[in-house]
Length: 414
Ligand code: LLP
Image 1 (cartoon, helix red, strand yellow):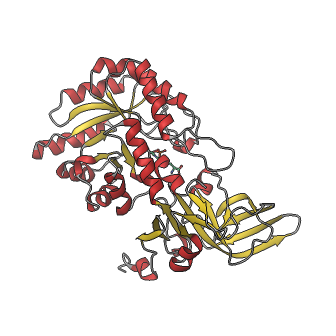
Image 2: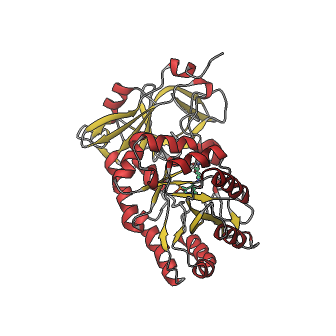
Image 3: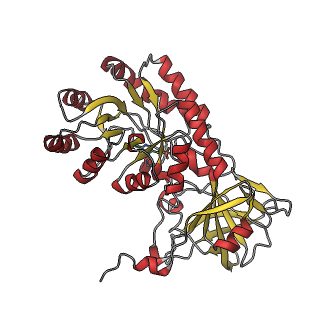
């Protein structure tokens, strides 16, 4: 795992903290983030793109994370009223926020305008209608970027591919819709158009897709003479052995080189999410049952599952597994790691390799679970959402406490 170390006892540690101790203290499932790793990735992003680069909070958000990204000089990309609320309540200044969304409500737009968010990324004509109606009432004039689809198909999972023409997001470049939207913004008192935005998709490994998108938008962006271009997020990370992803620095260098070659004079920014947080965390589970089906398969069931990591079910995503007590043991046994939910699709790792002596009560870790696990988690089967711990220099602090059964009733007013 990216952020893990092996302690003198041969067991797994994060941020200098024994995972066995953390599990004993806080229970499992448990998300443990290496705080130094998070800070290092934020710094790498700021070094790669300069001021203006935003952390995409959808990947993982709580107040501690919002504060950390802000302290390290990042802006924050929020995509809903909820994400905006968490960021603001963490003390992030509104002008450091960028509001996204393909279907922002009047309420979301109004809250963002009243708060004074730094940028609203306008996604549709209907949204411009809403902004104009709001302007008529209060005359506020937010700075906006226009989101365009450059018509580039990145090779990533269909569900997270967003740069192609056939997309629910943004204004299409090839049909002229984007040019019309620019003209509309320029003629409207309701918005102050400062730039163009695209986001080609997520978990993108190949820098060339960014180059292609930059090449497509460059002539247009250069003609417009707008001061900003955001290339969105999407830098991929390695989840399993054998995968190789570019670092944030390499991604930034590739994007900047593409922009240089295309003669882009606008200030180039980006909004990585996954690349900031994925490798910083592991999820610690306790093994509860081992079901051996001779000649068929062995099921290892842990105390979480699709409610804390829906990515394997949604995208068929792969993960490694490591035993906390023996991270370096030979992993010779093929098993399927499943969760505790009431459906067969509740898989965490379809083909996991584990040491032969794996047993009930062992602590099992899935590394690289810092992105889109906690944030896409659920209370399915009324499970309690896990706690989140930040570890650094041998000290750990709880930043999100584990839910209690009464939390499940907090909104139940019947
Ligand atoms: N900017 C925009 C406009 C986005 O839509 C996204 C992600 C990002 C930035 C950040 O992308 P990242 O750097 O994290 O790839 N749930 C999926 C990923 C969905 C990504 C949605 N948008 C997953 O677990 O793989």
